[in-house]
Amino acid sequence: MQLSLFWLVAMIACAIFVDVLRPFPITQMNLGTRLAPPGTPGHWLGTDELGRDVLSRLIQSVRSSLVIAFGATLLSAFFGTLLGFMAAKFRGVVEHVVVMLADFQAALPFLIMSLAVLAFFGSSMPLLVCLMGFYGWERYARITRGLAISANAQGYAAAVVQLGATPSRVYLRHILPNVASTLIVSMTLTFPEIILMESSLSFLGLGVQPPDTSLGNMVGFGREYLTTAPWIMLSPATVIVLTTLAISLAGDWLRDRLDPTLDSIS
Amino acid sequence: MLRFVTIRLLRAGLTVLSVMTFAFVVLRMSGDPAQVLLGPDVPQNIVQDFRDRWGLDDPIWRQYLSYLRAMLQGDFGLSMRDRSPAIDLVVERIPATLQLTIPALILQLALGIPAGIYAALKRGTLADRGVIVMAIIGFTVPSFVMGLLLVLVFAVVLGALPSGGASSWQHAILPVLTMSIGGIGVLARFSRSAMIEVMGQPYIRTASAKGVRWSDVVRKHALPNAAVPIVTIVGFMVGSLIAGAIIVETIFSWPGMGRLLIVSVTNRDLAVVQCILLLVAAVMVVSNLTVDLLYGWIDPRLRQAPPTH
Image (cartoon, rainbow over all chains, first blue to last red; front, side, top):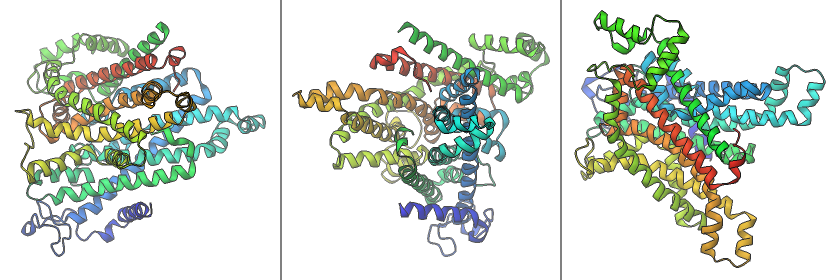
């Protein structure tokens, strides 16, 4: 647990202080030291096929992957919660539409839907964040809808309605704080999945585009040098695995702390 | 029972319709469909013929209806690559994808469920820990990392297996392994927790207290009750298998639908992308429907009222 928190803090520090930590600019090439193995003085994790420092690229990649995953998690929590609340507030047609959208999401593996959208519109950073922002919204929607309906049946929501509170006030000031811990736990579940989804897309060459770099994109390019320079691919792969592992462990811990009833949701 | 099946069928139909609508909307938002589906340098008469046939000069709602009609007749437009119908290109790739996904699914079911049940019955043993570790690997190691690690070990270091291509059955070993390892762990973990939950129920205690043999308690009382959550997760896994096929086929240069999708996305061959999109949606709808019907069969209580979301 401490170890995973330490790793997460280190990753976030990497993402924030990337300009200070990075020993070389990520595009600086040095054809004299191409494919240098890890441990070479000055290039502790080695260099890639163009002589770019793997460590510098790794730090930069951590930033892009975390920024995308963070933005996307917030977006999807926002939309999911909004739709869930709307379904709980208006019921009827609105609820049916939300359920139909959730069915739609269940009928298309997310990777395939993203690939289709990227095929039609081409890949760009804002589009990628928005697209990832659709990941897992149906989970929040389902949770908030259920919780909001049961909150409406409880005394406190009815009491503030009686006092003349507007619906938005009831939902934002009274119901939201009561479902927040469940939402935060769901966010720790979605966050690593978004990291994996973005790395998969980038690995396939359809996510983050060069000269920008992300963890998946480094693994994708490192694949070509698997036999001669496996370190290009191994270091970002290790970071992906450790980060998702750390977030899952931290999420489990948080779940035990905040919401013991959530055991079955995943 | 009839009502249960009818509601499920209606919802499945509605879902297919919403996927088609999604494709229609995205297609319209990205530009003139005649240009997009036929490609840039097509003779004017073919473009006009296409416009007439798809009614592109009609009002938007009529276009939508004729779009749906074309989809239902299997007319997905022409591939940009060689001007052949997109659907033919896709259909010819299906067998290769099934050669990977079906063995992977069988492996997952045949290893994952028994491992999970065994772990639940022998809690705290080495086997139980093994299942938990496998499940963690399944959740945290993405398939592209898993695939490349397997290539590194078995193809590069040991030289025992080919790293790509599809010319013999040995070529399928690493892709199938890559696709199934994570799923085995996930399925084992879910079966384990479903089984542990069921084993804690009062009816299990009652059954053992009245002297039913232990093997019968597990087989007749515990397993049928643990089946519902396990079936749910198997339904989800079909989707992740399809998504996994895209990545695995790319890593191992396997000539299936997933690779076709990636190549078509890269070349913006939209007719093919759209065709694969609808095909996958159809497969997923059928699999979700099967899961729903299986629920009704496993658990008679669910036939009465459809479970709400």
